[in-house]
Length: 101
Image (cartoon, rainbow, N blue to C red; front, side, top):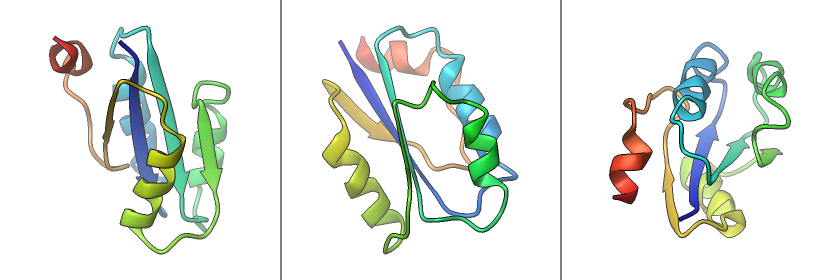
């Protein structure tokens, strides 16, 4: 079962690395990561760029806030299960496996 995770972000350069590490350490193989950044003016772009090609989709453009960013991600998500995590939050270990079960 494919899982899509949307990460809306704006000026979260101090936090997004930990968020992405918590996603990519999930040990779930069929995972799609969609990062939607509202054109941050801090180091967010540089942090995310270090993960490429891992994010399946990386949108870096102005938006109308968190809901708009999530909706942009939803339009691109192809997973059977779709969710989002804020760019300053963390997923618990094996979280995705537990959700899929």
